[in-house]
Length: 193
Ligand code: IMP
Image 1 (cartoon, rainbow, N blue to C red):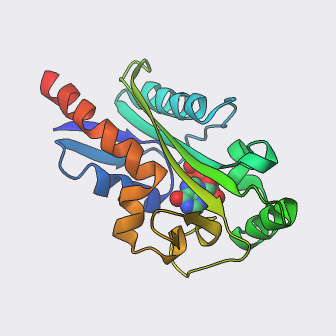
Image 2 (tube, rainbow, N blue to C red; image 1 turned 90 degrees about the horizontal axis):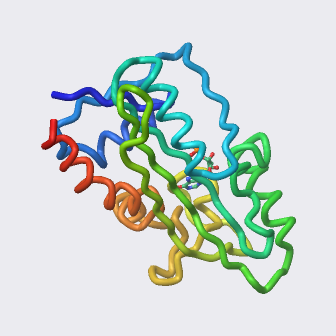
């Protein structure tokens, strides 16, 4: 079975990726802890490619990496690449976003997830993006999920990500959509050997 190194030190992310890729003949493994990668790309995709490529080269194995964040139209795409660094905690990040948006009428936003797969020599074999469109609420709603989930409302479901059952969020989310597109392509790659 071919090995695929997951370019994260986060067990939660490994488990999530494991779930998405469960039907495929790839053995997933966390990247070595000492391998720190700075996210210096100008886009989510550049960061995903950078992480996958560096981990592949360092380990001599195929690698997968993702990068994601929230873009709010009325804030010119912020927090965007800085989604994780917009405040010290999820609570502070949400408070800052709601404060900066104020009573702005245009609440449109999208979550983006870029996923890249690198071959063992660091070259990029696949890159795919998933987008989930929604709106920013005026207050937090729901207890589930993580990050900006309590303020990200999906009109087709009339629920925030934090109000959804995890299976529904996994299907509709930016990450779910990216992996849905990725799986048939990864399956073809595995078949080629
Ligand atoms: P990263 O892809 O782990 O770098 O995530 C970037 C940041 O985007 C996270 O720290 C969260 O703040 C935010 N984010 C990404 N995906 C989600 C999501 O599904 N729900 C809520 N916040 C998210």
